[in-house]
Length: 325
Length: 280
Image 1 (cartoon, rainbow over the protein chains, first blue to last red):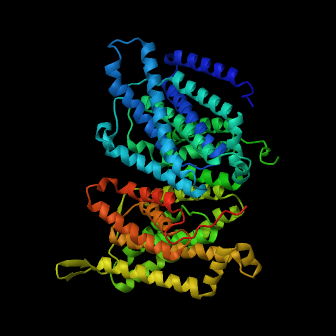
Image 2: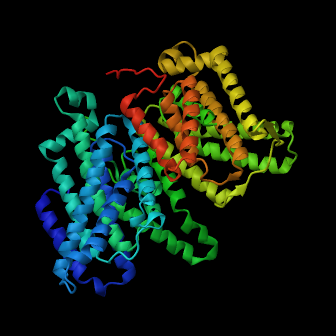
Image 3: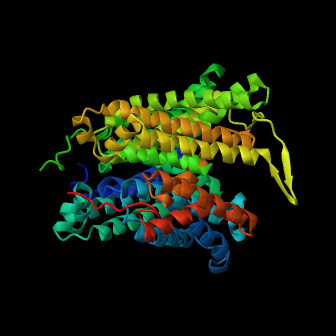
């Protein structure tokens, strides 16, 4: 694994994203756009992988946490920002403030994760999936009913803070934290919960607590991704964080292979590029126009095909050695 | 109406122990089959309406059996999570294929049964409501007959109880499961047509909201339990109507989930369900 020296990896990745961010203006805006999306999707997919892959739960509400993070971070920069920051604040101050906003978004999402997770993680597989799905729905209904946050129209004119540095920096930190966590003594508990809950409990692992911790951390990073997303799209609305968004993230995790961080990163990249490729294809001739709109159809077929043919994930070449000790 | 859909979930769950996410989309397909056949018959007589319904139910039963055969059967012995993900995939596939085939815009549903209004003193009742009620109740009774008093019903209950023992007793498990899927899907189609008849606007995503609500109804009544599903459907229907009439009408979508979370928290087996301890 390329995470053999996680700290080196983290530093290298952070440096690389800083360089990328610095030279952003020299890159074609289209590529910047796609690359930023890739970074955000990596954060989302890897954090969901902690819940769905490593810990073996099944959450369908990741977009809900993303929404909480996006709204919180946007509220911090838009409403609180003008009161706190001086008029011509230097870039470094603005960046620090953005960091504060992102962390606030993550913290709110983590709190939401605790709120949802504590009761529902006592449930098994399918029930949990439904409850998290329901949570996603409730979140969007809540945001639709909060008038100061724009109601159904959402928030507009969010300052454009997200750049390549933030997107890839966040991706690197997410990968680092989650890898380090899973490989720690504490993280073994997650994997034990995934492999066999009853045996894990017999060994004295508090599986419910493991699940909640995984859930809260996953939600935290989803919130960060949401904050990045809001300051990248510059407008957010409850509709943008619906069930389809959650499914998109789930597809990334499944294509990458549940519990396989490297695979999930690759899948996030691949599945971000896929719609762009489809869009190009449909631009070639008008008769191919339908391809551009068939993204979700493709995702659904991909899901079914993956489950039938390669349930361990596209990029998982090790025969699940971990489960057969 | 919720009762009909909820029973579909419960039937499949009772036999296979998994949640058929695609159920609500079969419901949508049923309504669309009703739309196309109903438009061609155009005569809104009781006989014509029943004919439309039977066609839609047969079509959806076939669809349900095909889905089971292609997507779920190869996964029979895999983990439940795998099947669950596949079910979500099938559901999304039907929704998006529906948007391509039927078009994403809502369509008006034809009046397949004659409609009249009856006045009982101050109370005005549309024959729509009566038809929906009568049809739902007759389906529930028919279902009870099938499950309790036919050979296939006995086999269904046997498979639900213990698939391996059932197959040792000479029950063809695959046939029983196909039949269950067919039956559940036919009920979904009936539900879809009644829904479209009551709220005459159909589109490819119409199944999502009632599907989720019906699932909650199934859990409320105790999943895998047919009378429970009927009771849950009734309760959820009443609660939703009250919420819609109150000040909180914009929160309607969230109510079903709130109920779900409350049930799972306080009475995870549902009102009429029995909690089974997990076997090691």
